Structures are given as C-alpha cells and as structure tokens.
Length: 471
Image (tube, rainbow, N blue to C red; front, side, top):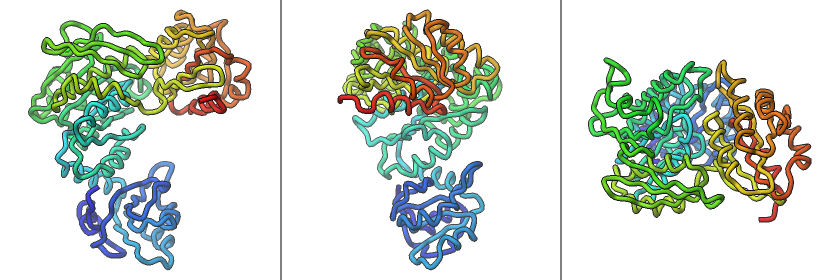
C-alpha cells in the first residue's frame, strides 16, 4: 500500500484525527486482529457477530500503532498509558475502509479484471493470476476474500506498482455484484457459468443470471466481457450489450468474447484429455492459431476455466504460447481437487465449497480414477432453497450411476444423499462421528473424494485422513 499519512487517510475517509500525530504513515491495512504489525493500520470494524473495538488492546499489545475507530470510549479504555498511538475517528469504520480502498484502487495504474460465476470463480482467478503474473506485476484476492470487505483488504495490500489487479467477485443476493462492480470498475470481466448456487436467496436461475450480469453495470467504452458459453443463459445474444436488461443498459458499450467447445466460439477448446492425477491437456484455437495446453489440475471443467484466462491474457498482451507456459506451473487455492497422500490411499481434497454442479463434476472425476475402490465422502450443500432435498438426493443417485463404490454422507441434509445412493451408502450425522469410524470405511488402495459446502469444514476430515501418511 502507498504510505499515506494519517492526515491523508482521515481526509479520504471523512474522519478526524483524534489522537496522535497525523503526519505518521502506515504501510498496510488490516481488520483481522491476528494480522497485527507495527507498520499496520487497524480498522476496528463492527459486524453482526464481531466488533473490532473489542480487540483494540490485543492489537496494541502486538505492536500496532495506528487505528481507525468509531467508538472513542473503547479506544481510550484500550489505550491506557500507552504513547506513540494514532487514531482516526469515523462514523462508520466499514464505510471508511471502503472509501479508502476505492480511492487507492483508483490511484493504481492497473488493469482491473473481475471474475464471477456460480462455480469455478477461484480456480479461474488463480489461472488468470498465473497467466498475468508471468509478464506483469499482479495482485489478486487470496482464499475466499471475495466480499466487499475482503476486496478492500485485498486492494489495500497491493503494491503501488501493481500492473494487473485480479478480483474475484462473490454474491449471495441481487445487487451485490452491482455494488462490487461500482467499487472495482473492471476493464475486463470473466464469467464462468450460471448454476444453481444461492437459489435459496435468489429463487431462480433467471434471477441468478441477472445478478451475475451486474458485473457489466459500470463498464466503460472498450471494456470486455469474456464468457464461457453455456447451454442456455450464457449465449452470445443473451450477454450482448443491453439485451439481457431490456431498456436499462450500462453506460458504455463492451466487447463480448465467447469461449467453449463449440466451433462458433471465439476461443474453441478441443481434444480435452484427462491424465489422471497428472491433470488435463487440451487445445485452444483462436483466429486460426492452435495452442496446446497442459495443466497440473484435474477435471475437464478446468479446461473451460483456463480458456477464460487465456482469452483475457490476450486482451492484456499475453500470447497463448506465454499463457500455456505459465499454466503448466499452475497452483490452485487449497481444497480444489488437490490430491493428497493418505495412509495407503489417495485423497482428492475438494472441500473448498460445493454446489450440485461442482459436486457432480467431482464425482465424474472420481469415477474416472483407477483404484481398489472409489469412495466419495459427501457433505451438505447450502443455500439451495426449496429443492435442497431433491438436489442432495440426486447426488447420491449420480454417484451410483457413475459406479462409485462407496458413498459416505455427512450432515443432516446429506441424509438425502445416502437415500439416493441406496445400498452403497452410509450416513453420519457429524464429521466427528465419521472421523471416529473412518478406519472402518477407508481401505488401502482406495481413491477418496472429500466434497461439501465450506460451512461444513470437511477439511478436518481431510486432515484426519492424511495425518501420519508417508510423504
């Protein structure tokens, strides 16, 4: 982060320096008390479940000397007799952080690339990062920091000479992508798919599609929307300027680039091959030029994600050949089809999140592996609305149809997965119950998939399966 003075920071945020020296500078910003450091600026955010003011004393004890607060009494109580501390008071620390991060992002001479979609956002972001960082100084949000608050923390961590900013944009309700697009003002947007995640809040795939398309709301002339072609919503005519929104259109016109396996796409993917745990290979053809790609990640769907990154790469001056070289060394965020060594068996860790689309894709990958048995440890999927029971049941049915040898279902909603899988399934109410009994069900030579929504925290199951394994 640029070393703004505290006086500058207060001015940008509409706050007042109430304590200390306004000429001091901060090297970074943070809102998690565990990230405290001497050069940091701590935002004491107030949320539904957490008030950062409760951690002021802890953050000061860790060496931090600069603060943005809204509760002056809490600050004074934490301060005690300490000296060398500076504080800016604002009415709302969250709004202050948003204003500060937006100003800083606008100050960067960087191409801004937004990434959204029902599934595959983080993998696509990681691929875009690999493509871009091979040639440019590139920043991205880490992990699942794809909310407005997470994006603020991400952006405030960017170096001032960042040339490309890759920002994953999450949502769970209509209007959220619109707000994030206003904040980011992307030059290029990538859209992976329109699935059935967040049906509980949005009600229909039509609503999900419209919510995702909010990513173009602040496009300016010359911006590009790069879309992985789908069977229904993500067709060229549906995402072209203005069509999907009727009379209400974005401020400027934008270019639409389509990727996919059909010959009418701008970037045509062909000859996709699964190479087991080694990953996938495929070709992409654009403007008569064919380029071969080899990725060290599993799953045919990752060829679709990679094509988005390749197309965006050419928009910022990275050739397909350069992208192919960078993607050969791709590393995905943890918990995404990562193969880990168990105690005599292999574990496919896909615990980062789950929807029916991504769980179905993971089950297909498992079905194509060679092992003594193919075992699926499947947990609950959240925010699926009225159809949640049927959608869970369909995952059990799919597992059986694909020839999975054993399904181990975890969590109350996953009882429906067990029912769908029938005689190949066992049910556990909690992950702790499964961990206590796992040695009964997982055998030497098995290939084991672990998959569920993030809230179930099945990474604890992965840890139990892999602890003590020979590396």
